[in-house]
Image 1 (tube, one colour):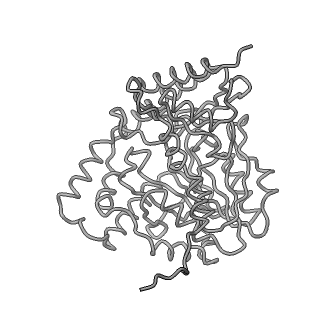
Image 2 (cartoon, one colour; image 1 turned 90 degrees about the vertical axis):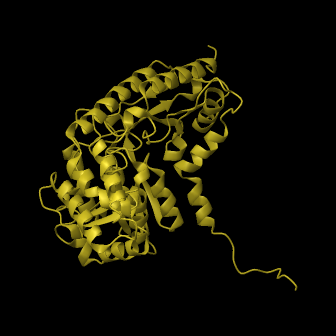
Image 3 (cartoon, helix red, strand yellow; image 1 turned 180 degrees about the vertical axis):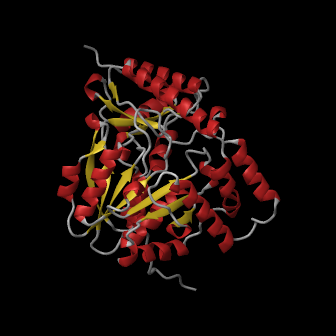
Length: 417
């Protein structure tokens, strides 16, 4: 039988482009440069927000027992049942409503397989022909990846490092037009560690209302704050502009592998419903897989019974680690770090003119991985070249070792004056 020389299919170019701009793609490249022959140095991952493998960052016994009880009940081995989804949605609405001036209903909530699926649902549902979306620079690359895959035009507004990474409102307004459907706000900030003041959030909501767009508020790191600004959910201003809030248990409860998140429609004026957006989001959400049934069975207890001392212990750990990280990087001449007030990250600017034979942030991170087995994320991945994002959510001993290696690397490669 003769095999055809002409086939009617080909790869999707957008998938290749989207994959290239993910954090995973950059980390794969950096990890591939680790010197496997150097057995004297363990790999120190100061690159991504998953400290769950470190003993100091273990989740609460309440969470573990809730999941174990769900498993042993044999009630959550099948596909999610509607009553289970409703009870989970009600628990999330009650948990979030503590911080809102109005009460959320279970109908405002969609459960997802982590925050990543929530981003996928929202970007895909909003990607109508000719639309554009405003993304922060620097920002979280998942938004760029999914917008690229869905052929949704991206426009980037700046965050201002000298103003605690606040949104450049004037620049934002200049980017928008009558086809701008949404803007993304990440608070607490990934990658910057910023925590926005209530007044600034209100200005963002007012700008969105003026421009006729909704706000996607990524609050995956909600309540993980340790500076002078308290965490304020963007949904507080849902009466000014419609807010789509993204959250999850991955960060505050330190269980990213449990894959449980949510989308909440903070829209007391029903603007999303009137314009068909709520229906589009729910329709696309119905196509997806949703969270694991086991986690669905545990979520009510996780949200309601986790003790306050678990939260405060995590905050104290992060506060201490953030201070050590900032102080350590300040000692290195080629770094200008910016203090973190929340999440698990800080951003640091690289002065490439002080380094010999290293031309950019990607080369810096690649050589640091190869020579010192320390992984940090290049700013290129986040839209800000010649910066790096450093994760301090690791054991203090590992953080101090990593900072020591970074310092040695920088002094070894310093340009001779």
